[in-house]
Image (cartoon, rainbow, N blue to C red; front, side):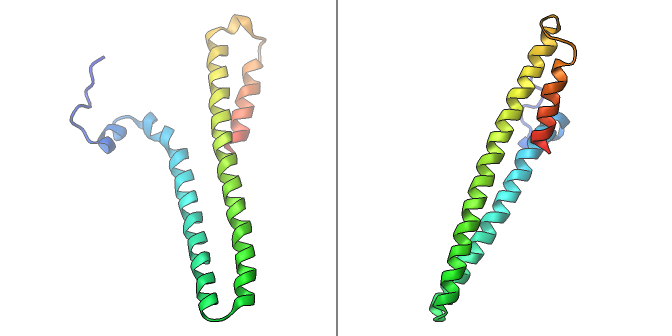
Length: 122
Protein backbone atom coordinates (compact mmCIF):
# COMPACT_ATOMS: atom_id res chain seq x y z
CA UNK A 1 0.00 0.00 0.00
CA UNK A 2 1.31 3.47 -0.89
CA UNK A 3 1.17 6.11 1.83
CA UNK A 4 -0.35 9.12 0.09
CA UNK A 5 -0.37 11.17 3.30
CA UNK A 6 3.43 11.65 3.44
CA UNK A 7 4.25 15.24 4.20
CA UNK A 8 0.78 16.06 5.53
CA UNK A 9 0.23 17.32 9.05
CA UNK A 10 -1.57 15.04 11.52
CA UNK A 11 -4.82 17.08 11.30
CA UNK A 12 -4.69 16.90 7.49
CA UNK A 13 -4.15 13.14 7.67
CA UNK A 14 -7.12 12.73 10.03
CA UNK A 15 -9.30 14.96 7.87
CA UNK A 16 -8.54 12.67 4.94
CA UNK A 17 -9.66 9.70 7.03
CA UNK A 18 -13.13 10.36 8.56
CA UNK A 19 -13.14 6.94 10.26
CA UNK A 20 -9.90 7.82 12.05
CA UNK A 21 -11.44 11.04 13.37
CA UNK A 22 -14.56 9.22 14.56
CA UNK A 23 -12.41 6.65 16.36
CA UNK A 24 -10.72 9.44 18.35
CA UNK A 25 -13.90 11.29 19.37
CA UNK A 26 -14.71 9.20 22.49
CA UNK A 27 -11.18 9.63 23.85
CA UNK A 28 -11.28 13.36 23.05
CA UNK A 29 -14.60 13.77 24.86
CA UNK A 30 -13.24 11.87 27.86
CA UNK A 31 -10.10 14.07 27.87
CA UNK A 32 -12.18 17.26 27.85
CA UNK A 33 -14.41 15.96 30.66
CA UNK A 34 -11.42 14.91 32.79
CA UNK A 35 -9.71 18.24 32.13
CA UNK A 36 -12.84 20.17 33.21
CA UNK A 37 -13.08 18.11 36.40
CA UNK A 38 -9.38 18.71 37.13
CA UNK A 39 -9.91 22.47 36.67
CA UNK A 40 -12.89 22.37 39.08
CA UNK A 41 -10.88 20.45 41.68
CA UNK A 42 -7.99 22.91 41.34
CA UNK A 43 -10.35 25.87 41.84
CA UNK A 44 -11.86 24.21 44.93
CA UNK A 45 -8.39 23.53 46.33
CA UNK A 46 -7.35 27.16 45.81
CA UNK A 47 -10.55 28.34 47.51
CA UNK A 48 -9.69 26.22 50.56
CA UNK A 49 -6.26 27.85 50.77
CA UNK A 50 -7.95 31.25 50.58
CA UNK A 51 -10.30 30.23 53.45
CA UNK A 52 -7.34 29.21 55.59
CA UNK A 53 -5.54 32.50 54.90
CA UNK A 54 -8.72 34.38 55.78
CA UNK A 55 -9.01 32.48 59.07
CA UNK A 56 -12.19 30.58 58.11
CA UNK A 57 -10.87 27.27 59.39
CA UNK A 58 -14.24 25.58 59.98
CA UNK A 59 -15.35 26.38 56.42
CA UNK A 60 -11.95 25.25 55.10
CA UNK A 61 -12.28 21.92 56.92
CA UNK A 62 -15.78 21.29 55.51
CA UNK A 63 -14.61 22.26 52.02
CA UNK A 64 -11.61 19.95 52.35
CA UNK A 65 -13.84 16.98 53.14
CA UNK A 66 -16.02 17.87 50.14
CA UNK A 67 -12.95 18.20 47.91
CA UNK A 68 -11.62 14.78 48.98
CA UNK A 69 -14.97 13.15 48.25
CA UNK A 70 -15.19 14.81 44.81
CA UNK A 71 -11.60 13.84 44.02
CA UNK A 72 -12.24 10.19 44.89
CA UNK A 73 -15.43 10.15 42.82
CA UNK A 74 -13.55 11.66 39.89
CA UNK A 75 -10.77 9.05 40.10
CA UNK A 76 -13.33 6.24 40.36
CA UNK A 77 -15.28 7.52 37.35
CA UNK A 78 -12.10 7.86 35.29
CA UNK A 79 -11.03 4.30 36.14
CA UNK A 80 -14.49 2.92 35.40
CA UNK A 81 -14.54 4.76 32.09
CA UNK A 82 -11.18 3.29 31.09
CA UNK A 83 -12.32 -0.23 32.00
CA UNK A 84 -15.56 0.24 30.08
CA UNK A 85 -13.66 1.36 26.97
CA UNK A 86 -11.37 -1.67 27.19
CA UNK A 87 -14.30 -4.05 27.69
CA UNK A 88 -16.12 -2.54 24.69
CA UNK A 89 -12.98 -3.04 22.61
CA UNK A 90 -12.80 -6.72 23.58
CA UNK A 91 -16.49 -7.19 22.78
CA UNK A 92 -15.90 -5.63 19.35
CA UNK A 93 -13.07 -8.11 18.80
CA UNK A 94 -15.43 -10.95 19.72
CA UNK A 95 -17.91 -9.62 17.15
CA UNK A 96 -15.16 -9.68 14.52
CA UNK A 97 -14.37 -13.31 15.35
CA UNK A 98 -18.05 -14.23 15.14
CA UNK A 99 -18.35 -12.50 11.78
CA UNK A 100 -15.19 -14.21 10.49
CA UNK A 101 -16.43 -17.65 11.56
CA UNK A 102 -20.25 -17.56 11.53
CA UNK A 103 -20.41 -21.34 11.16
CA UNK A 104 -19.13 -21.71 14.72
CA UNK A 105 -21.83 -19.61 16.41
CA UNK A 106 -25.59 -19.65 16.87
CA UNK A 107 -27.65 -17.08 14.98
CA UNK A 108 -28.07 -13.99 17.13
CA UNK A 109 -24.95 -14.63 19.23
CA UNK A 110 -23.33 -11.50 17.77
CA UNK A 111 -26.32 -9.46 18.98
CA UNK A 112 -25.43 -10.22 22.59
CA UNK A 113 -22.03 -8.57 22.15
CA UNK A 114 -23.49 -5.64 20.20
CA UNK A 115 -25.86 -4.96 23.12
CA UNK A 116 -22.96 -5.12 25.57
CA UNK A 117 -20.97 -2.61 23.51
CA UNK A 118 -24.00 -0.31 23.24
CA UNK A 119 -24.55 -0.46 27.00
CA UNK A 120 -20.90 0.36 27.72
CA UNK A 121 -20.87 3.26 25.27
CA UNK A 122 -24.11 4.76 26.63
